[in-house]
Image 1: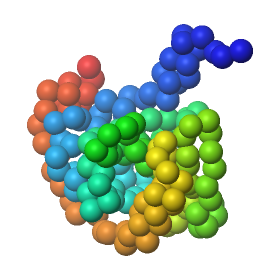
Image 2: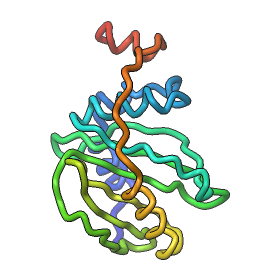
Image 3: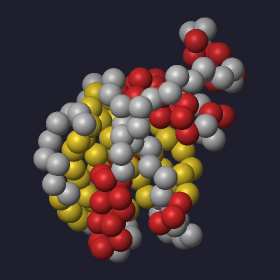
Length: 161
């Protein structure tokens, strides 16, 4: 029996954290700043790949949680269909690309440089593997310091509310 919509929403709600709102929508255009924010949340440098040559436009990134551990979600949109999501969390694991299917959603997992990655979408398995290979082989760039821009969200969070 399929879970009721309320159960699905509670599972989704459990992924939210305070940091989810700290990655402000206003700053999403500054990829360096987003990368810095996500790295600070995870405690490790991670990749924020440019997938435009492959037909996927970066839309936004946010922080989630799995248990008490932060997980970042980086979202892209293609010409049509559901978002392509790259998830990352601090951790070790196998550096081999491993594909799995969960219902209609295909995934590829791997780890490198202290970060475990999961790429997920309902696109063709071959395309998903190509995208994962591209992300995995992309060099890890050093972080550049970026000042945190003033936004109403950032200011409210800084001031406790």
